[in-house]
Image: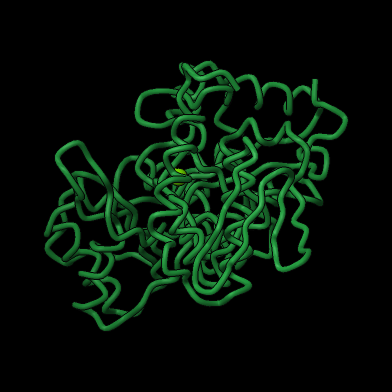
Length: 348
Ligand SMILES: [Mg+2]
């Protein structure tokens, strides 16, 4: 059941990012399964939206189901699917398209009715590839030969869509080149810039909103520079959850284009009442939390609500349009409170 005063009731569909929102590493975020089940049971549509083009929707759905979040391929939209849909508006279906990326890229093109040449697995003929377009997404097997084939076609001027331009991917060994870095190689070689499907560009989120069929969608994400900026670019409301990569200071330093409409600890915040900001006597209040800037110093009272404190302080800092001298210490203190609250062993 959704409580009668829940934030979720303000929206009829939810475009939910995966990593940092639904799961962190191999584990589901605490409460994510129950929250999504309650929202789904109310008839509201949930679409899982991912910039990761390498996995096909049924693989993503199977992963979610394993985590206790029952999902089918139709509940997932990848940037490869959004990119293939962009090409379907530019060139006739049935055309040959060069797929540069993991299996998810070729699968998305096939689903749109294109004839696919897989740059990674299929050998090139002596005469090169006769393709009408290129779709480039991440794949661990993408090497120089595949990038060269992409460059040949892109250099001829055919439509070129990148699934996403995330520059890096965190892996167990460290920070690795992401699709944006590989796209940049083709871009540097050809002097062209691709159209982009994934966040922060609008096509993926707009397609997800269309598939959801709702009139009042909410983007739920953990990254300011993809999820939240993408929502703003697509003119969709956004909720930032603090269960992923964004720390307090990131939020306080966010440019206007990356400021969410609201904030929550994690997905469970969808079932809590909406947070409201009040300004009085130079202080910014959110529930029992208060943030005030005196001189150049930020004074935050948590009022047993660290998320409210983060949100009040964000508005105080944004109102001041200058970073307080003690912002780094104040943010570190709030980050500690947030991670204690996120700890699954802590009662909430
Ligand atoms: Mg994420």
